[in-house]
Length: 313
Image 1 (cartoon, one colour):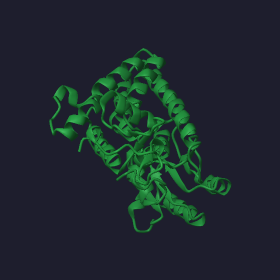
Image 2 (cartoon, helix red, strand yellow; image 1 turned 30 degrees about the vertical axis):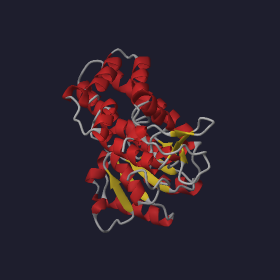
Image 3 (tube, helix red, strand yellow; image 1 turned 60 degrees about the vertical axis):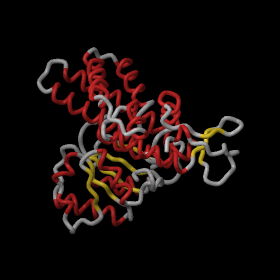
Image 4 (cartoon, rainbow, N blue to C red; image 1 turned 180 degrees about the horizontal axis):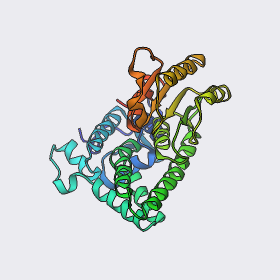
């Protein structure tokens, strides 16, 4: 059914089964700004309004939002989703994938070291796409492309440095404001190697907090010997260790598992180094693995660390 043509009577705002916009955002991971943009610009979701103008959503709206997310995660432009859902028409190929143009615009901004243009391009995408979609189709490919371009290229270090600094500030600000909307102990995100400001831990933290999980980030490298101290001082719901190049050995895995059991804390080892870690063995049942930020969300859900159980459905 097209939600825009739903003829159900407008609820008063206190009837059972109707949800305010913030509750829908909590259930789906799509923030209120994006839900409003989908309504105003594309008519994708048309909620009912109370006499005072407050938006209310029902179960059909929530299911439609999840169908929209399915298409977005396949790379479909938001402007083309409505016809796919409502009429089953395939978009023209040139309009099917908006990401190449968005990536190119941000790469051109980086070449000019134009931080404001970089920020403007991302803000426009952020208003229309949820964090997981942006991470999958824009930020991770952008980071990979930049690494390839910067290899041995004069000026590449400047472009990489600008992107990393901008991402840390941008995501850190959003994490800060999202944390203030959540309660309960945080997910503690700690870097085991790399340099401060490396994007991996911040992307993991941003996706986690967007899924309703408060986070606390320590992105300067921390030794395994200090992890117990961190968990003694911070009553964390879970521990996410990010490793880019760290050599994960059987000894280090045994130490991580010992720390996780000592503090009764779920532990996720994330990042490229997790691919080579011997944690898949049955000897390390307390350690979950996630090779990139996108893989972190299913692991958080499997560990029972997401308050919003329907976010990944």
